[in-house]
Amino acid sequence: MNQLKQQLISLFGKAVEWLVQKYGIYTFIAMAAVILWWIIMGDGDSSITMASGMLIAGINGGKHVVDGPLTTSLTNEGSPDLLRNEIDERIVKIRPMSTPIDQLSRFGGSRACGSMVVDYYSVDTKATETTLKEEFDEVNQEAKSGEFFTATLNTYDNDIFEPSETVLVPGVQGYEADGLRYGGPLVLYVLSRNENGIRVIAVNGKSIMGIPNNVPTIPEGSKLIRMGRAASELDVQTAQFEALPTKMQNNCQIFKAQVEQSTFQKIANKEVGWNFSDQEEAAIIDMRLGMEKSFLFGSKARIYDSNKREEVLLTGGIWHQAGKDFRYAIDDFNADSIIELCRDAFTANAGSNRKILIGGTGLIEAINKLDYNKVISANDTVTKWGIDFTELRSKFGTLYVLHSEVFDQCGHYYDGFVIDPEYITKYCHVPFRAEKLDLRKSGVRNTDAIVVTEASCLVLRYPQAHMRVTETSQS
Image 1 (cartoon, rainbow, N blue to C red):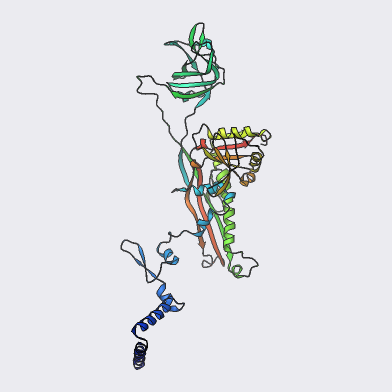
Image 2: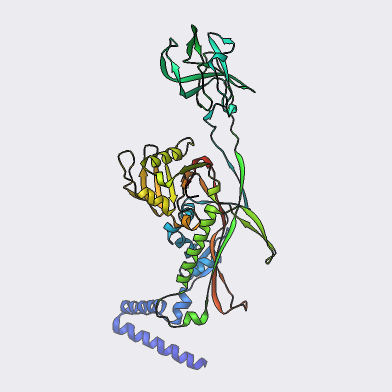
């Protein structure tokens, strides 16, 4: 064997010597380089050996690739969380118009939570108006405060008023300086608050029997609106203002979908290209539709499954979390109804001036039948969060309108929901992910299987910025 090896080496040396003499040293080097490139880049076994690469540990715990390029298999081996699963990238592209709430929550980002039960805080603005509980008769003026007579008004919410605040009474006429001629709505100044109500004086009061600045008669049910505070020159302090958030709670619900395909079905000839990915997409569509209904109309609860002998958590829908309501009658729905809807959606909540209106078929049909004018326009289509909306503009704000069959399926054919996208939050205990199940190796079934899972819930952090739209005559 050694003698044969020496003979081969001798023949190889003579061949190299002959090539150098015949073609020159530089031509020989070029030919050798081409042969070497073909060996490395070719389809032979040597290419697998030289180009596969391997991972080595770095100084600070990192991984480095040697003897080859960085491949997806090496990436998954060295950093398994670096590459996102394809299903995560496709999830927001699968029928986004069918599940707008779920779509919006995914584009808006989510917060990780370390528990299946989420505690969150919601804060509201202080109420700006109330109504008079008992009529005030102008003959019941009280003791004089300087040049003004005082009056005590008992409202349904005396606690919203503080000393030094001014109060507008839009349903009662105020007076000019002479106290005889009408001069705009009545304005009051709050002196103090006690168990009987708020003690006020009139800013533009009525003159009675030659005595100016009396509080005129205010009928029961009159609206009283808080306005700005008025301080004197020497005032350093004013009534305190505190706001405490309210603690609320919701449950994360575990949503799952599983797809399986037997080995024989996979290898069988098919008339059309229906493969495992198509089944996976159909399962995700069905899963998202179910999540959409739970996120909207679900009821927060803990139940016990006697078959599994486990507790199951159900999430509460945002329909029940909204802080405002708008009611209408479908037979009386007109352009004025749209203006009133926009008024209620955008006022008295300090929310955004652009909100989303998602509605059932009956409500969207009624909106489409209206004739619009310069006050209200509904011509433009805009794309936000991967969804195509119709833009409904009013002087109060802009609504992005979208039809949702989920409302029809859940018994809200004529209803809708106004959402402020700035104040909706998604909490995820388990982010959306796909896992392959090796049922074949475990001896369960001869199938390829994948299960998609998410444990999450939606919350409205500022309930007054969101509004239910309900039809009254059909219920």
